[in-house]
Image (cartoon, rainbow, N blue to C red):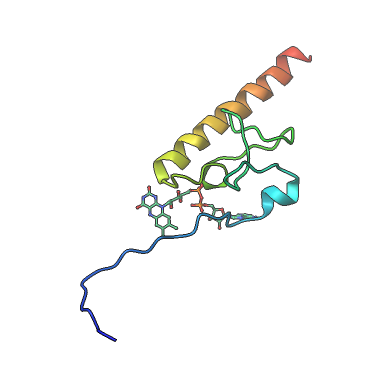
Length: 88
Ligand SMILES: Cc1cc2nc3c(=O)[nH]c(=O)nc-3n(C[C@H](O)[C@H](O)[C@H](O)COP(=O)(O)OP(=O)(O)OC[C@H]3O[C@@H](n4cnc5c(N)ncnc54)[C@H](O)[C@@H]3O)c2cc1C
């Protein structure tokens, strides 16, 4: 066996959910194995929203997780506002 000297290396991480909380709550997954959501982070369970790596695993990036969190926040706000004003 030949030893090759190196100054660095690259590691390909696995794209898997690090938490089972979505599954435990009954959330459906999409074909990539993460929680399926609409454009505002809504899952199939009313009142449960998902964002970040929990719902967008490819590409897994901080800026995308933050943007998805913002969208889910807007979704929560819209749904609560509608509940408050349209059902009262
Ligand atoms: C090795 C590695 C390198 C990366 N490098 C980059 C990079 O260079 N640039 C980049 O943009 N992105 C990078 N990423 C991706 C980036 O880190 C993620 O996309 C981002 O952190 C996702 O943010 P998040 O808030 O969705 O999830 P996370 O940052 O994973 O936060 C989830 C949090 O929820 C907590 N949690 C989980 N389950 C529960 C529970 N049941 N109850 C309470 N808390 C819970 C966890 O402990 C964690 O603190 C890298 C990821 C890895 C693994």
